[in-house]
Length: 238
Image (cartoon, rainbow, N blue to C red):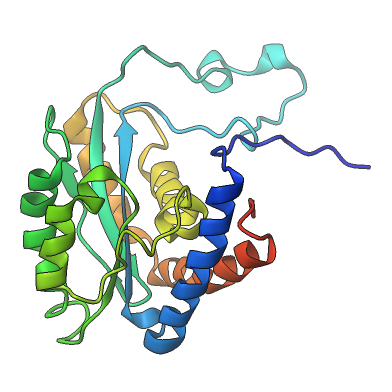
């Protein structure tokens, strides 16, 4: 017998399980047609100035708890730490720059188009994908699934994963969620930061330092995860 840690997950109903399983079949067909080199996975994440810690894995080896220095034994937390929302995208062949959402700005349809879609996504076919079309992935956030956003993408990047195609409650399918964000946070927030500028500089530096092999490995896990969810009939895979 072994002990296993219980994990918090999104509650998924029978209907959601069915959608997760059926929509994954469509994504597998896309993968078979286009190949992983033509996929761009994207996501947003909120980073704070606090030190990143993993209570499950962070351990200190010591002869006694009293001999551990206080600055190592404790990870301090404050109420409402300074934070910044970050958008990024990865593929098996490259990465986008990090996009920082200005403080106090909500990511609505207009902000998403002006801050991310027009300056970043519209140019990627000329840069990262060398003039070839690519499949753009985004999750089900309201700014992503609004009629205006979907219409803009149909006009400017027709081969995107539409809102009816991406499975609901599926961070376990996005490489940014199941792999890359945690790697970046661990690297950039090894120690707490005194201000947002320090956090941003650290995020940008460590983002560029993540080897492309790691990004590629995360993307290559995508079809395997699709198959795993189908086998679990839309259930949890982690």
